[in-house]
Amino acid sequence: MQIRVLTIFPDLFESFLASTLVGKAVVAGLLEIELVDVRTFATDRHRTVDDEPYGGGGGMVMKAEPWIAAVGASSSEGAHRALLSPQGCRLDEAKVRELAGHASLVLLCGRYEGVDERVRELVVDEELSIGDYVLSGGEVPAMVVIEAVSRQIPGVVGLADSVENDSFRRGVLDFPHYTRPREIEGHSVPDVLLSGDHQAIALWRRREALRATWEKRPDLLEGAELDEDDRAFLAELGRRSRA
Ligand code: SAM
Image 1 (cartoon, rainbow, N blue to C red):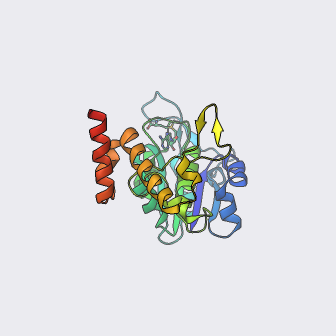
Image 2 (cartoon, helix red, strand yellow):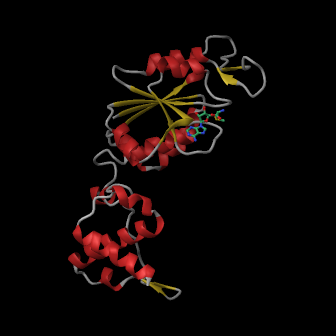
């Protein structure tokens, strides 16, 4: 998969790429990431990328022409072009998987008051939001998209199992994880995890995943893949909470 990031702050991605699984995936050839400095597409002497808003008020607006030129130069045939924006479709597991299905993604990171509306109209396929709050730029949202999407690429996360059990993957949250030591301030690792009984461990993990979802995100259970045993366990949790 190829991801091109259009930004006026490409340096922000350096330590992100150097320190994460995403960078390792790039080195391993599983993912190609290209950082494109939109400023290099500004044609005036000062490489201006922003200007005052028509109608007055507010802050500066990113000029359309450098963006349109940068997108044109960076979009291979069939590339999916997404503008990071608080007004976009909110990122969730389904959207991440959909994005991971594209062979080529172009991510546009806005700054200031945002990008001239004509960029969205002319060269953007969709707007993507990472949540209902406003950040000062699209770079951190782009990193969120890249990290989430790259986990879907086979081989990026060493053990396929850990992705399979990730929260939201099959409609429920992940089960609790423990590592050494066995006890901290009276809180012990559940005995079953030390038993070596893989069937019992799998059953415990499934039930704890269901319990976590039931307690923290019951809204997810409606769309989750549940078998008879799962339903019986959830019904039991419900009965116990009412007793
Ligand atoms: N005035 C814009 C609005 O209220 O809709 C916000 C502009 S914001 C200060 C500057 C840039 O940050 C945006 O163009 C976008 O690229 C990025 N951004 C901010 N919040 C975001 C979010 N929740 N999701 C994705 N991108 C975001």
